[in-house]
Amino acid sequence: MSAGRTLARAGMIVAGAYFVSRILGYVRVVVITNEFGAGTQLDAYFAAFRVPDTLFQLVAAGAFGSSMVPVLAGIFAKGEDERGWRVVSTVINIMLIVLAALAVIIAIFAAQIVPLITPGFDAVGTELTVRLTRIMLMSPVLLALAAVASSTLNVRGRFAASAVAPSLYNVSIIVGAVLLGPVLGVEGLAVGVVIGSLLHLVVQIRPLMREHFHLSLRIDMSDPAVRQILLLMVPRAIGLGANQIVFMVATMLASGVGLGAVTDYNVATTLLQIPLGTISYPMSLVLMPTLSRVVATGTTREFSQLLTRSMRLIAWIMLFITAVGFVLRHQGVTLLFAGLDQQAIAQTSDALAFLLLGLTGLSLVIILSRAFYAGKDTRTPVFTAFTDLAVAVTTGVALVGSMGLAGIAVGITAGAWTEATVLGVLLWRRIPGIGVDKFIRPLLVFALGAVLSALVMAFMVQLTDPILGGDRGRLLLLAQIIVTSVVGGIVYALYAVLLRIPEMGQLISLLRSSFRRGGGGGAAGAISTQDERENANELTGGPPGMSE
Image 1 (tube, rainbow, N blue to C red):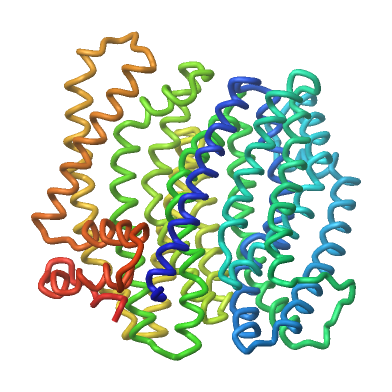
Image 2: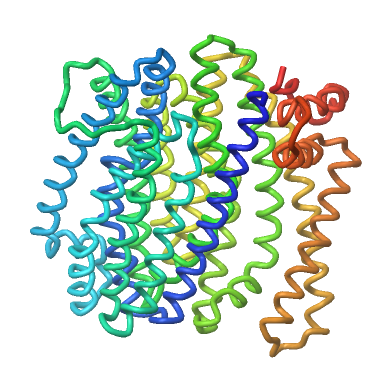
């Protein structure tokens, strides 16, 4: 099986699993909102989530992917498996000690920490948030161990278990809401989070054992690989800390908007995470080891082709999703979250509209960051993360008074596009022949097609609204969403055909090759078939095929 086809199959496995996870994430929020409603309990739950999540993001999270994957890939590529497992064990032991100590400290001072991030809560809401925070502090410890397992399995070319793990996490929280909620109240959700974190780890243990991993309690700081991983993690952790500050500020601002606003904002961000989680993150996850190997060989042209093609494809997909979501946001929120009242639906829809405008920017940040991580550069994305922080917080604080949750969303979007732009410029300056500058023109072409598609879909909504009437049920809403989306998709596809945009054909060929058995070429061959069309297409101005 060719490398390109293997990569495509891995991508399909990860994308499929992440799609299920994001759908379950949506189901989780639906079940939670229907069970508890937008109010004090859910506001407290979502606010309490921020503290353990921040702890996890600072110490673990994406830091493992950006630091462990390049280092471990080099060790295992040399056949030094025994050394690789020692390095993994050392990292696990260090994470356990650090996270356990921090969790205990935060639990002790939770009553002083929580009011800082929920200044708009009353005494009842604050006290509940403190209780929930203390319950959920076990989750970052378990998730950190799971993150080490995921990074290690990905290096070994095993993606399935780490991709399935988030689904078990979501299922556990859903069960906590349905079974424990009526008995324990919102504390049942917190218990579900902890159990889900445990399942996230447990499901990856057996695949690790099959790779002959054995845990050692020794901390071997003499190995330069361990020191390199920790050094690479520091700037990445700082960058994630900047992102967490954005989330913290968003929670603070939302807590002052009114009762239920924290819940409404989290519903909007949950919907935004569906395309990010099903497309952008899986692509970056599979792309990361490949980019790392390309960097190791010193092949700039191949690196450029792989990165630029990925950026173009992700932008082409995400801009259409933005168009669909922007036009049908109110219908979508009404259909999916029937438990929200009209004010909450309107508030959530407004926030989602402005978040969607940053969807492509957020996706490009995910892809571009991996280009730096592949070269073991975790410092540059830290710098760009702080530019995101500055723009997002400043804009959010300035607009929340006049726009409410929508003002916070504008800040997130502005920060995302700023970070994507800075990352692209820095990468282009570092590697002038990388071709990132050639991405600007196709981006504008794709955006024009998305706007055209959105206008047609908006016309369809205006056309069907009088037919459906004012008091429509879920079935009619679903029919309107499906019909309008299909019409918009046809317009977007025709636009791609007329302008000879290769991304549509590339996506179709990639999907076919991912499922096709036998034959040669696979995904790489499928992408290669687009080269002649792309070379002849001066409008999009893209680079040659990444399979070359």
